[in-house]
Length: 112
Image (cartoon, rainbow, N blue to C red; front, top):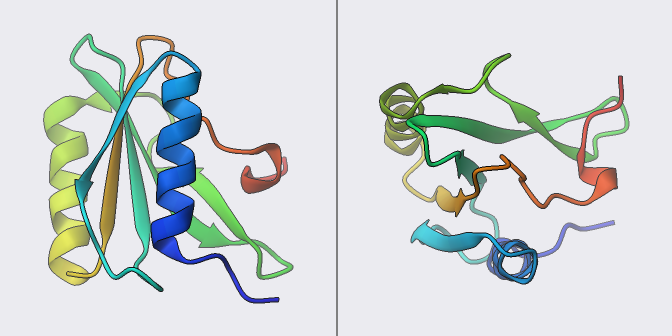
């Protein structure tokens, strides 16, 4: 089964976040069809969570938090900049939410 285009997936995530009461926007537009998406969840207190896609044992895309705890905004930005340097087709979605909600679907989360 092929994956949904990055542009459609990004639009859906932003819409879910906005409906849920968070502020969400596209910071960087990557390749419409296959660009990898990075999600930054800003907690509005100087901390942020960065989520990047990985593949599970079934080769399904899941989202993995890049640090155990929320990290300093500057560290989150450095991580994103490094990812953009490696992949110029990268998408960056930012969600501003003090509750640190990422608005991902249950099937997009890693299983424990």
